Length: 115
Image 1: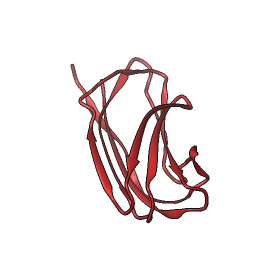
Image 2: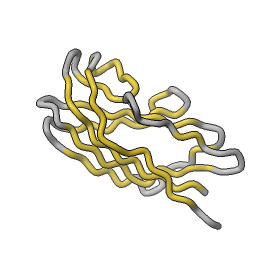
Image 3: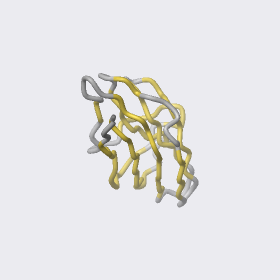
Image 4: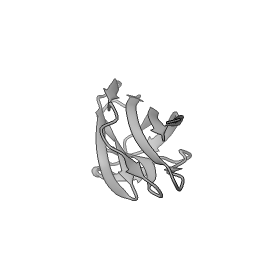
């Protein structure tokens, strides 16, 4: 079985709207699993420049799938070890949840394997 690595990654500015109100990360592309394939999340790495905790939220078809909290001016690495399959034509997106008005930059790297 062949597989192809896919990534959602980069550094992005954000302005929080509340920890309970995740918003899309402006400029970060979404990923749609192609027909006939499935995707498996392998890891998430993230960094946060803000002086307060934020969470990066992985959404599948607009519904929160995983929350990755990142401490104030901190970083996190979460090995997912291919916990589940994401079937086609699901779309994955990363949103950020941060205290209202908080600004900063997040660095995200979500690694997937497309099989």
